[in-house]
Image 1 (tube, each protein chain N blue to C red):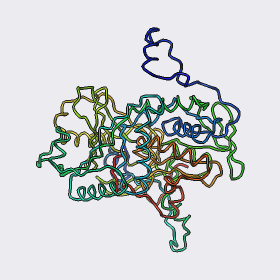
Image 2 (cartoon, rainbow over the protein chains, first blue to last red):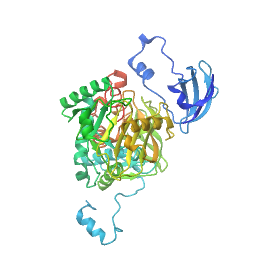
Image 3 (cartoon, one colour):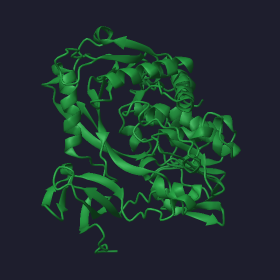
Image 4 (tube, chains in turn red, orange):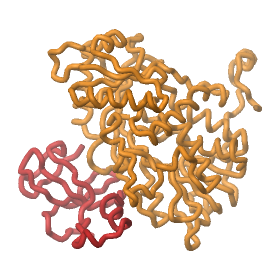
Length: 91
Length: 417
């Protein structure tokens, strides 16, 4: 349970949001040319990091916009929030 | 057995005020090399070591555990045991485990307090009714006991359930597996630890794995807080931390680790003598032998290793509990906690070889691994010893995420395990 600073609405309770999983997984440009291994990598394999993770969230019960969050998954402390399409502010 | 537990030994030790019971397992320092190392000293890991020693004659093995044995998800779950899964592969896996549970206390000479008090799954809408009827038929075809109950039969089996049609999600029926039930979670870990130790397995606690050493495509050993330990076979049974260990070996797994919460109430006299699960409203409840209500809540939807869940998840579960069991409205909850569960995209586990020779994973049990503990250990031991899966866990290989041959229990079985 934590607060998320929505880039459009400001700080709100996490229960207003829905997590969208790992960010920056790029949708394949030529899906028909993918091997089964590449499909598995894209669809299922996840870093599932303990530590700093880049992830997507959506403000379901608010502006309903998607954005990115940098969060330490070992203690749920949010390091940064940035809009879709922007470069992560930290590495 | 050095220290066989019996009525005789109980009486004998009573004369010395129970101060001279022998240690149930040793506390050794790691050797330089083992034939196999199991990472993770929970129920599944200890069971794996036990069956490796017992059925596959591997005696030079170690279990390494970051904390103390049974201190992870083994000690955090709601102890429900059942095997009424929809798909054939799951039915085979979980019923294999249930059959071992039925004789486990005798086999281990350790009372795991296995209690076949039945598990009832409730239906709250028309789709639930259809799904549960379908599952009942599928279970029977697989030789698993299952009956479908109408609302009156549900009420008769568990009278404290509110079966009024005036609640938001009325009880339209349910299924019952009478062979299902609960067991004492700590005793399972302790019983397997004692049994494995007896056969020469080294159980090394407070020993965190820091790295996996590879020589090309095979494993050479593990780096730990107690130094380097050489081995050719590593079985990883690290639950929520499976991806962390996989990362050490340069592997990626199809897992997401999320907090799953549970809570227990103050102890009261016997009021519910079965396990009732309700997936549509996500509430499940049973009563421990101490008298506490044991209530399972859901998972949060974000990855976290913090062992803390969100308050709204608990609130949602308690809302459902109160509507289904108005009699609990003034109960006080004593403890609430979160465990980190590793969830697969198809909500089925992975008991499998990997692309690295000598590295095996038993993970992805998600929200329902406890019930499978003996079967999981048995089949994982078989996989490690023979470098080939047993026919019962062949479907639970890692390659299914490439081939697409998933065991999709997400919608099919109960969401809550």
